[in-house]
Structure formats: C-alpha cells, structure tokens
Length: 435
Ligand code: GUN
Ligand code: ZN
Figure 1: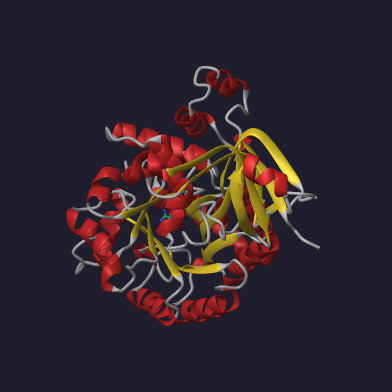
Figure 2: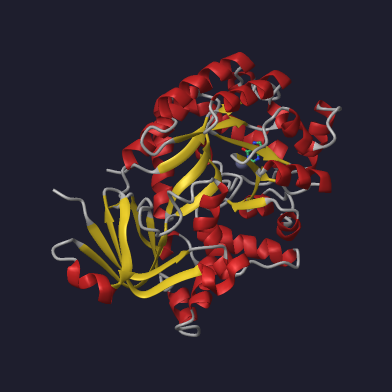
C-alpha cells in the first residue's frame, strides 16, 4: 500500500529571498501538480508534465486555489488560547492579571492536553504547520503538547517555560529543577518523529542568574536544541531588567552574558533595541522575531524592520498568541504591513509570503526540511482561497490575474476562512480534538 497523493492547483513557493533576489525568487506554476509520498514531496511540476504519469494516484484538484508551503509561526504560547482579547493592560499587568492565573490551570495535565489539542487544531485551520511554542512552567504540560503534536504528526518546536523569580510561587521552578526537567524533556522529545525542543527561559525578569546559567548549560549539552525568550518588548519590562541586572550594558547584554545568543536563538519582540544590542544579535547570528498583532494589542511599540535588517539581524514573523490577537499568519502579515506603514516602511506581498514559509524556515535553519516545495522537503501544505468571503471575492474582481495583488488581498483581508485545506506530512489535517 502506498500513501501517495497528488495536489493540483496554482503552486507558489520561493527559491530565494525576494527582498534580495527579486522576482527570480518566486517559483509559480499556474497549473501545477505536487506529488507527496511518505510525508515528503516527491515531484513538483506542471500538470501537462506530471498528469499523464499519475495513473491511479489520488488527486485532490484545488482548481484555481493557491497552494503554498504550510505556514511557520516563530513565537506563540499554547497555554494562552483563552487569554486572547483580555482587555485593558500592557505587558507586566497583563501577565499578572490574566496570563499567570490562566497558565496556573495547566498544572492539571488533562487541562494541558485539552488546551494543546484545541491549539494545534486551530493552527492547522489557519494553515500553520510548524510553530515555535512556549509551554507553561509545568513539565507535564509540555509532554502533553508534544504528545498532541505527535498525534497530528506536526513539526513543532516547543519548551517548558523556566521561571524561578518574579512570578506566583506556584508557577515557579528552580534553577536545578528546571535543568533536570528540561534534560528529561529533551531526552524524551527532541528529534522524536517531527518534534524538536526549545530551551525556554521565559524572559530575563523571571529567571535568576543561576537559571540563565542552567539554560546555557542545556544549550551546551544539547547543541541541536533551540532557545526562545523575550527581549525588549515593553518600557516597564526594560526598566525592570535594568534594575535586576545593574551590571548589564543593556537588555540584550543579559542574554549575551549568560551565553544564550546564537544561530538557534529566537528573541521575541526585539522592539526597543540600541545599536549595540542590534550588533549583539547580528554577530551571534540570533534572530529577532516580529510579533505585530501582539505589539499593537499590548501597546508595546513598533518593530523597526529596516534598522534591524540593515544591522544584519535575521528577522522572523510570529503571532505571539495570546498577547497576539490572531492565530492567522495571514492576518499577522497584514498587521506587520500596518506597523511598518506607521514606521514609513513597507512589507511587499512576496516578502511577506516568503517570511511565512521559506524565510521563517531559514531563520530556524530548517530550510532543508520545511518551508518550500523542493523535492525531498516535508509535505506540509496550505491551500488558500483569496475569494473566501464576499468582500474578498468582490475585491478580487478588481485585481484578477495579478498574483502580487492577490497575495496582498490574502494578507489584508484573509484569515482561517481563506485556508481551504491544510496537509501535514502529505495527509489532510483533521480537527483531531473535536468529535
Ligand atoms: N514576556 C514574558 N512573558 C510573555 C508572554 O507571555 N507574552 C508576551 N507577549 N511577552 C512576554
Ligand atoms: Zn511571547
């Protein structure tokens, strides 16, 4: 028996960064076929080339819909699905009033499993097939997340939050306790099937020196794991970091000092950076992760994409649910465009779709596995419909035949309604969490 399956539609992916290579970076096949087998892409070409040889291979014909690689979200919190749209606060009060109490509920592994299940199904409904995910402080809740991801065969990168100060006592671990728990989690999950681990000291505010040292030790002992944390998001947070680490030259210097920067390190937000911090990120090969819906919702500030790019920093894009307000990477790209408008900068549609796919994969160093339709890549796919709502269909009549404008309609007007289907490792995704 074979699990071979083919998709027909308008294939779009990227072979390079359009911000650098221009139109040459765009790979578009108007009537294309993607053949998937064993979880991988085994052929890609025009229908004229590939259709005659398909024989009895099941074919999902998506007609005029756009077939793109599954989206990649570089920063999201799975325990915060019930925190989205919490009114009236900025970061530090938001954590205290809404987020920490909600995260406390995941001490119960059954709650964690239900949350993970809802969360992963929601990602798939939005065409997101890979995400870099924060768990709570509870190790069992991170086990629950990986178990649910494994059931769906999604490629997820996740980690248990490490917090040993400035949090409610029942949400704290210790430097040694977190080191031991994370060592176990890495042993159980990193590289098992499609699951990968990210060491996750929540942010400098909630870790002691000893815990940041423990995080660095974990990275040194497991060179292929990732690191994720928050950096320079909010003015009160930055003032607090200055107070707690009086010796540090700036916020980024805390992470640099403890050896947490490097090409597998992702720094969420990175909004209010000085030149030296930008240099630290660039020199270490660390990535800054732009979280636009969160940054506007929590009133954190406007990410300066041009300045960071000019400084040589690798930049990714993410939802940051539940500070972020949408699971949709389409909406996230739209909000990124709006933030950059306020900065008198821009985000071209091809650049945006590159970021959502091959770009974010490259930030992770996983471009050989995900983010494109290269033959041999893992077959994670989103099928998009720019005419999903009456308003979108109406708008589309004005830009018919223009791919760049169609992508812009998707990022400005699109959401989960524009995702007609999602395939995970070659299989159609279903809402496993629902009966
Ligand atoms: N900084 C520390 N924790 C968080 C979090 O959960 N969300 C956001 N947006 N920022 C943080
Ligand atoms: Zn976050």
